[in-house]
Structures are given as C-alpha cells and as structure tokens.
Image (cartoon, rainbow, N blue to C red; front, side, top):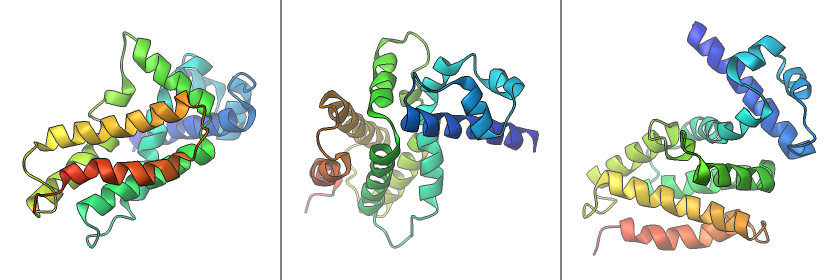
Length: 196
C-alpha cells in the first residue's frame, strides 16, 4: 500500500508539473506552483526530485500513465494492428494537445546527450511491456508476420514513433502529428503483416 501511495504522490507531482509546463512554459513555472497544484508538500517534492530540471526526465512516465488508461480501451475484437494504431493515435493526440513542443524537444535532446539513464529506451516501461504483449499475441493469432522476432518488431515500432516525434519537433510542429502519423504509420507497419 505504501508503494502505491508513493507512486500516487510522485504521479500527482509529475502530472501537475507537465500541466503547468504546457500552460505557462517551463521557465515560467516554479516548484511552488507545482507543489500547490499537485496538493503535495515541499518535502514530498524534494523526496522525489532534486529540482524542476529533474522533471524533464519524467515525460516517459506521463506517457506510461496514458498507456495504462488506454489499455482499458483495448478490446479482444481489435486486431493487433488496430491496437497498435489506436495506441499511437491516442498518445500522439495527447502529445499534440497537452505537451509543450519545446519540452518534448528538450527531452529528446537530453536523451541524445545524456550518459545516464535513457528513459525512452527503458524496456521495463509499461510502453514496451504493452507493445510486447500486443505483438506476441498478434503473431500467435496469425495477425502479424513471424519473419521477425517480437523484440525486433517492438524495436521497429518504437523507432518509428520516435522518428515521427523527432521530426515533428524538428519541424517545430508545423503539421498535425496525429494526422501525419495516421498516414505514415500504417504504411510502415504493413511490413508487420503476414505475406499473402
């Protein structure tokens, strides 16, 4: 129970921070505002984070929270491909609607230059576990090709999503991430389908 409360406290701080970062900008958001919006204490904040900069690495946690919500909406009637495309569209909609482009670009740049933990590549994340589950079941049911391993397919899917996000950041959000991904990802993922 204590572990769940700790996760909830940390989660409240992360959610509040990213909401404020989006609304006010990263530079104009203070730790005090994050604490107030999250309904937590200064002690709790500094228990989990050294400062505001440490919150930049939590974006992947925010994504995983969204995946946990979306898992509830996946139905057995959906094919593996439909599930993968649904997850992508919903997450990219959340990103486009509520994540600051500047902060997303910062996250990608820090992940490229850090010598520490690369959160986006952490295979213990809910994201990777969910992809593995969907792809393994899709292969088992004959919906996805068996020419590549589950690990290789997960890697390719994640790589494609990162590429789309990176390009969107590079282009300063000049196009709809959701619409573009809706056109490009199905074409890319068609290589996952069994050959007829």
